[in-house]
Structures are given as C-alpha cells and as structure tokens.
Amino acid sequence: MSLEKQLESAADLKGKKGLVRLWNALGYSRDGLTAAWQNEAAFREELLLAVIAIPLAFYLGHTGVDRALMVGSILLILIVEILNSGLEAVVDKASPEKHELAKRAKDMGSAAVLLSLLNAATIWACLLWPV
Image (tube, rainbow, N blue to C red; front, side, top):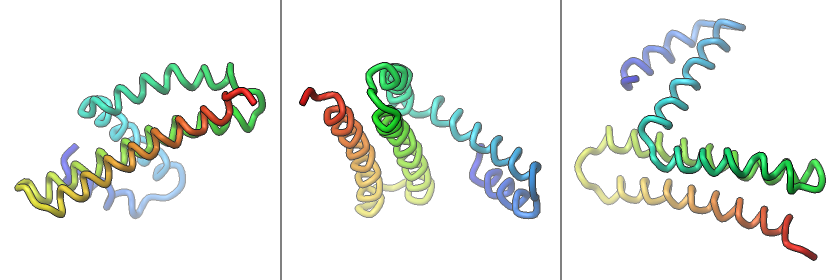
C-alpha cells in the first residue's frame, strides 16, 4: 500500500467509531503483516523461529510465568522487526540518497532487533539453565 493511500486510510479512520474503526484497524494490521512477510526476509526468518520456539516454550516452561516470558520474548522480536522495517521504509522514502542521519536511524533500528534477540536468548537461558 502506498504512503499516500495509507495516509488517506488513516484520515478515513479518524471519523469512524466502534466496530467500524476496529474492523478497519484490523485490516491495516493485516496489510502490515502481509507487507512484512512479502518484503522482509528477516521477518520471515524470525517468524519461522517463532513457529518453532512458541510451542517449545509451552512444552519447556515449568510455570505460566515461564511460558509467558518465553513466548513474550519471541513476540517482542517480531514486534521490533516490524518497527525496524517500518523505520527503514520511511527513511528510504524520505532520504533516498545516502545520508549520515539515515544510516544512523537504520543502524539504530537494526541494533534494536539485535537487543530483542539477546533479550530472548537471555530469558530462555535463565529459565532453562539447570540450577
């Protein structure tokens, strides 16, 4: 979906209320997930990780809190990856030429993904490491 169409859709959403607004918002979320799947190899790889790790978390977690932390850490990776992809798309649209600030923004988004991966690895290690 083009930026102009998204802005137009957001403007259309402004006056909507209740179930219509919720229904439209769900459609935009679906479009975002579809765009991430179609355009971002890293998202597809991390989604594969989630497909494996989330059922594993339910099997390996000893308590509800363990399972929630393990699943939440994996979902956080997907969330951060989608935000990073959105940031990169905006930077590419706003500044197609090379610029130090554009590079900084993209590098910081990438660092956020790395930190979310380290966060998940730390949580899983802390919960699964034998004491």
